[in-house]
Length: 438
Image 1 (cartoon, rainbow, N blue to C red):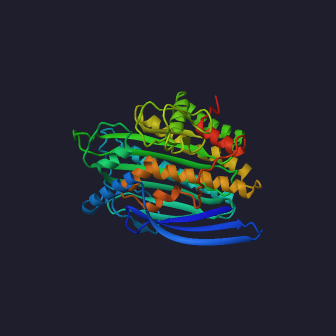
Image 2 (cartoon, rainbow, N blue to C red):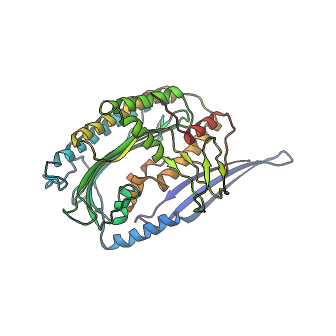
Image 3 (tube, helix red, strand yellow):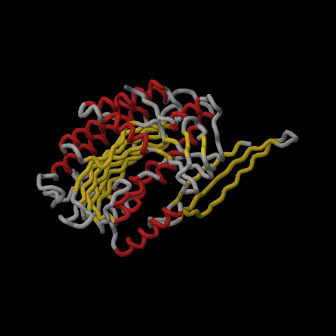
């Protein structure tokens, strides 16, 4: 029996909420013992809650939002402004050395990168055009969201830029900072600007790409306990194929390494490992025993000392790239130039791969495997991704936050690819990260 499930998650007009509505259409084709074929289609709508921990956070956030919104409600604009920065933003509270120029130059960089990437995406598609939404907020900030859906090459391609002024609650500040931070701030004013993109091609032999580059400042007054005034850069570019073409992955990583090596030869190995560690769908168990040893040397994890009762994947979302966050231990001008170089490397790293793979013939089996890997993409983004968590906890623009999700994805119960198959090779590489360039 072949069962296919298509779904759409519909959120209420006011977000966040502790529930979502899932419309599921299931088509099952069965062959009986008499040789007759029967097709049954069933559509059902149900309300489901998010993970318990997430629901608790969202309820807490909803209560805090009712009295003090963290980010102002956006309003649509008919034209793109020259800048989304505040007119009064002539001096940055994060420094006495003219950080406002970094804000302005970073905004200029991400908008130029958005134009360049969108032009390349439309050229490859050969007919599809981006839908553009321009929005702003009364107190300053705004963004440009561009999405191309159901094109000739692209299932869904989103490229967004935003400039945000807001106030973070403690939960969001912890989401924006690394795990293990000892700081316990109250509400923290902040400035953030960034470009974020996820590109999902239709062909299962063409990989998905994600990139994101951002600049962040906290604007808390001096000497505020637990909320230092500071700035940092973050970002990265990573590749998520359904099938491995080694020359493609090597090309992609070599471009990332080239961008890093222009600034510091230690950047690529450091940020490559950071990427492998960050885009990891973790192991979880329903036991807190510390004597469990898991050997991840094969596709199926081997367990010693104890019984593994629940495993949430234990694999990477894809084949990596580079990733960095909270980067402020180098010269600010150098880091701005580094982020610019990385953003400018997106097109040469990715578009040649798409040109080679977009027209390859494929089967229903290939497409089904791509949809299973898209399911992993959804899992990571909604459960682990810090950017998604931060956006949800600060009441950000929901269409922009969830634009990274593919149009379609698939989950099968206890699916295991045949050992030695092309699908198995991809999964093995996601579990055991490889060095693609030296």
